[in-house]
Image 1 (cartoon, rainbow, N blue to C red):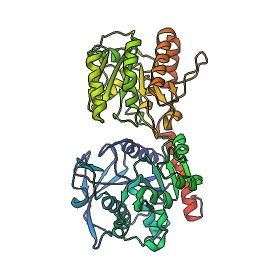
Image 2: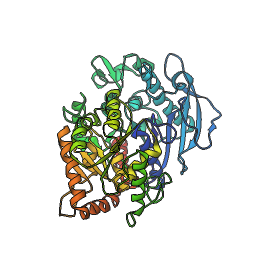
Image 3: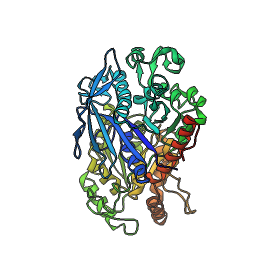
Image 4: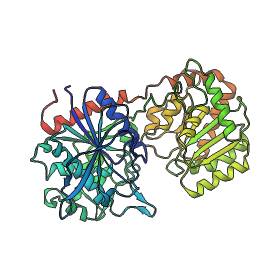
Length: 493
């Protein structure tokens, strides 16, 4: 396939602005695509909180953005993704992006999110026009960019940009972006050019639904999640749309940056190690036990948790199972996370109730997260729902065996342990219950104490997995090709 011109339009990009895994994807995938020879560029808002990593320069011409009653304007800042030559354009407009928040204010979701992200979509298209650069495909991310495919299908259909295909990635279907009907007029979209039922849910414009109907191709972040969101239980009300578009929906597992996440080189660790020499992992375990004021004992299995404290992540189930685990098993557990205040209180209580065996750091600390990934024997991830998940892949990269529920990307990345068969990279359970967590932790403990050779085999297989973006990038290039052929009627040469 010839080199493609690919534009990423996104609300987040690592290392400049990050709320979740979307930022990790957009910070890594374009670099892999560029390494394959493609011309990749990124557009993102210049929030008040954006980190000015590297050298930034302001483009000399103001950018006119055709939204609202009169044209709005943006200042465009240009830099590159660190470690690459991939251009990143940040759109600065104080009215829409001057505040620090990406999505939410201290009082909840910002009421002007519809207009803010309509501005982003139209601004990205205006920037292409200003640059005289017409992408072959525009890669849109989540509800924040749901209006961009509609813009190409209507007001820009007969312009050079109208030839561009769109690929719309669903990172988390639960967040859909509802807006009053005002956003249609604000974005200068003609109601008559498309059916209302392609936009509206419950009397409001649903920006996720809009993207799902109008994008050329759809992707999501794991094959299992692609199946789950087409069901009533996993579709959050949009499963009929996804069943309608099922032939255009592809599940591609997210990758990780296996250079940045490498236990042999990670500067955050007290000792480095590799699959060939795990001596440093024992040093990391001892340091982690000491950090959380646990008994420094190499023979006790240490379980780690790094997570947002939320019911979606199954942390309420872990809280319910915790007294039974601590009372009946000889284990240690460390936890890093924040979120639900009730869960924070439960885990804070546990640090006192099980002093020397359970430790919690309520908040976020990137360096400590890496030390938990490296120092643990097992990594707990009991999610009720997990579109893809990255931390289980980080854990396996670091030789820490994941214990996960069978959902979304966890199923697609963790192979269940098969005793005596030389198979598996972790422990998988089915039911989202405290009892299932208790039983699976008990299974992992029994294996740890009674079959250490099996644990060693699991570690070697886990560390040998290829979760790099190189694999996923090839699948995205294929999907881009399908989208371009659908849009233009011609296969890219």
